[in-house]
Length: 120
Length: 111
Image (cartoon, rainbow over the protein chains, first blue to last red):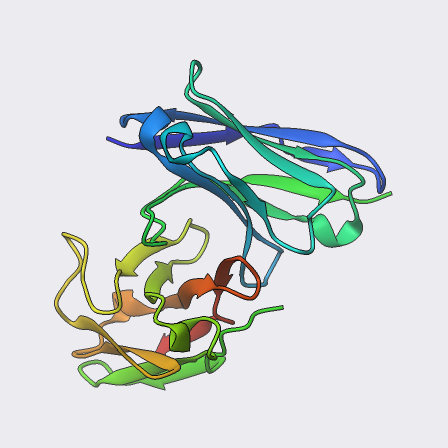
């Protein structure tokens, strides 16, 4: 069974930093493309970033609102996905979901999410 | 800001058929990228409902169906049931943004 468990969320002041982690199990993590998706309170889903498997080049892409501030990375030796978030803004407040994503674009497994609150 | 537009809400009586539209543009749905649909029950993470425009993952009832034409896609729910009350999102890839895009989301209410 695929399991994705996010951690690292919490309360941080504007301008601060936070690193989210996602522990993966139940599938071959190293062969799988991974995503972060976020959802602000009461709002819709927003794609944050994707990292391909190293086999497919390990390319990283980030959404425009977070480019230059957030960095997605992976440690295949630990089956773990990360999201380093710097220069946080109040608009980054959201539940952050770790997901698998197929090359076709379908997001087939989601974690339970971790809440990040950016507030002074 | 979502680039895929959905109606904010749709409603129907039990047993009825409802449809949710997802309107994109020539850089996403119109460019031939697949459309996927997700169901999000209150307080839970989204789950895949339709992938590759019209395919259902195992375990998803055949009451749910998807289609795509031109720059739009749609999700149909036939035989509406109380348990279908949820938020529904479409998703695709956008070549101008070089990333995935979600629809604005639609809340389905069973009357």
